[in-house]
Length: 149
Image (cartoon, rainbow, N blue to C red; front, top):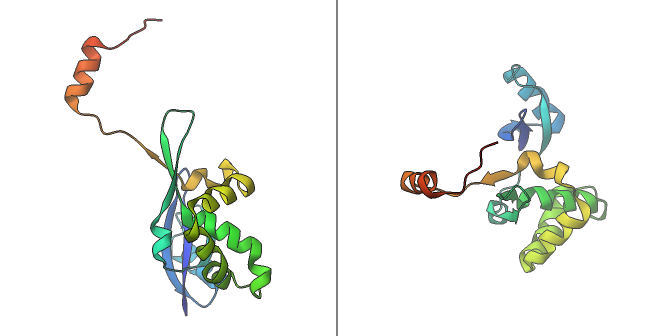
């Protein structure tokens, strides 16, 4: 048995680890245990690696900064090059993609920007909001710019 990460969720990204024989078995177990969910978004063999704790941060036009898991970007690249590793995504990650990404942060951004679309990552992204105190809200309420339409 291996661990598989099953991602799911409507309007948001959630995941769970499931012990299973293979990806299909993991998906079947998920669907049996969580019938109220709207099915599996993705399922893949889980690999724990410190590098996967990182995110790529980007400022977007809505004025917010978003964090996207580097693991998502790494898996995209490893999936692309898995043929060079006997169709083994984990080997592709460990022997090629992770060392490349660890060598230079630019490589993470380069792969994401040139090989992935925002639609590929947006469900996995987290919008980071600035923590603002009640005093700051009060100050803005009293003295901030306003417009009545």
